[in-house]
Length: 308
Image (tube, rainbow, N blue to C red; front, side, top):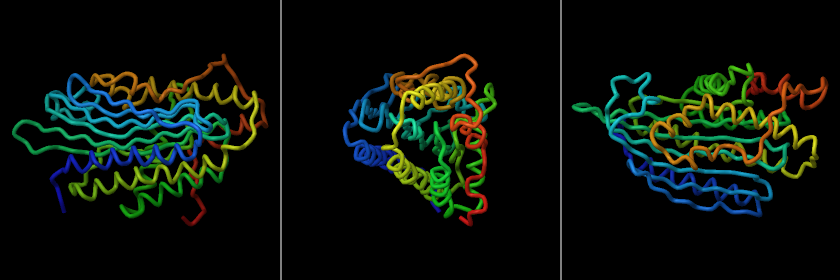
């Protein structure tokens, strides 16, 4: 059992993860490439933003790596850790959002992150966090099952209840209280992950990070050539509004980035390029648009009765 955090090993993994995901997504898109934008943070640290725009499949996608540090923990990170207030800290992670062109291809988000703080006269305190979630505009049950089956397989080596616990946490976290509806069909969400065994904790974060593209790429390839028209595009832009609302009102990562003096362009990279808000829009009963909220965005157990 290793309790000493290996900061360099985590950083090397995250930079490699960013590169692998970008390569896979470029291969799927087939038209555009990620631009690379390295940046430095005056307060300490920096990162690499990778952005793809106006592609054949991806309308806007960003895969960010950041490694930032400071002398005093931001308020968003000490709300339930008051003993770390004033401690020097480091945070690193990969965060991504993919907004496809085709309304039948869902938006996806993933994040894996590592925090470490060093209180005066005390051993370092670390924790991992992350997960991934799927936001369809038109729902397909087989896509939801594949997404959750992949998530469960990633969690299984770390305990029989891990997937169920972090699936539930994801459903609770990605919930728009003011709309009283989930943002999407869920996935995984975890935070404050520290069992006292650094190697095992790091391995779990890697399992989640590595499984994201295995969960998402088959869904993209299955839907990317499905014909769509103006009706589907309008609905996609309308539903993207929910994504924006969550990220600007509730998302912890956005709040942490802004409070810690992060790079605004990278923090807000997750927002879609086009979006619309329609006043009191209600889908017609019996349509696929109505089925999205009536059947798919309900926090259901997608693996129930499937023996997996």
